[in-house]
Amino acid sequence: MQAAGGAPLSAGGEVGARPVGRRLIGLLALIAVVIYGLDLLTKTLVLRTLEGEPPLVVIPGLLQFRVIFNSGAAFSIGTGMTFVFTLVATGVVVAILRTARKLRSLPWAITLGMLLGGALGNLTDRLLRYPAGFGRPASGQLQGHVVDFIETFPGHFPVWNVADSMIVCGGIVAVFLAWRGYQIDGTREVSAKNG
Image (cartoon, rainbow, N blue to C red; front, side, top):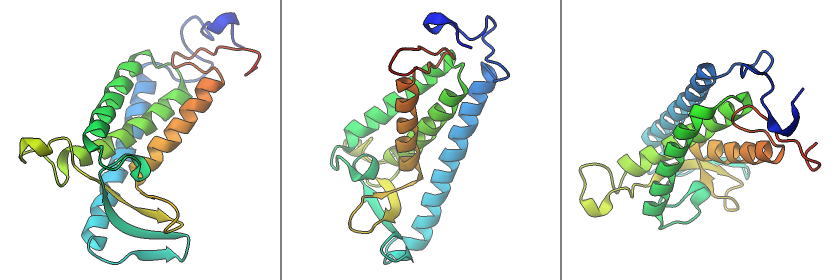
């Protein structure tokens, strides 16, 4: 059980049989790499097969694949603010890497891995894809468009990609963990509201 006031669950930082320290950082990195790789793979396949083509209907009225180039944030929010979102994504990546040094929580390792993989996937697009990319005129730097291709409820919901879904899911889990008092360092703050 948890000691009072958010103290570590054990003196050595080991939470029962849960892994700590380097193993959790390794898990975070593994999850981020898998998500990043899956995001890049799916975007590459979709660009090679569907770019310039009509939407590929998978389930009529529910799911189709359609390539769009998004200058905004996840789910096409904030179109036209590409430069700002590039800086925000860079800040998120840096913050996760700095936070990882304190990591002693398995749920947070998974959550941060999801967020890092998603952020890196979309950041890669912003740095390397059209119309920006390295080697292009300086005015276009940090303004590449993210490849989105998954369209659920066509016409009623924004088009998204693997990175977007991981960012959103990771964000939801992070809010839940914080609400329940779970800390990145493996402690848990217990209050009347989250008992």
